[in-house]
Image (cartoon, rainbow, N blue to C red; front, side, top):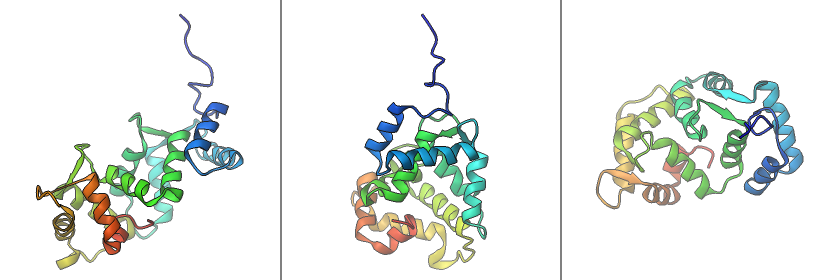
Length: 191
């Protein structure tokens, strides 16, 4: 009974099997994957992206905002194996979804991020927390009246909730976002 000590456990090695899997699940070429891997290792020599490093990268993209809360939700979504770090495979799948995924895939990813407790639905509290985090991220300070996160969350749920249970299923969320470009831009800015 031997132990696995090969490249399977070494997060700095990109195997041909992993490259093939990424090619099959993303629109990236083999060379693009290798280039991304080299860049990932420059920034994360141990092959693991920590939550703190993830946050510092996000802060560079949003210098006027506060990335902490949004990053907490995004990081948890991308850390598929829940080990507290994002490895290269998780990173590439997240990049592929956010940059090149079709609208349905991107809306599914957004739903997964907003479903903070993993219940399979988004309630007003979860929606409010994510809207507040998005406001923090972009430096939005006007949060009164219709811009109040609680008000926005209530309105979105009221508009999309076809079952009347005051929660959004993944199907309700995706259908609602597809049918309302204004709310889609609010909840999924790059979709």
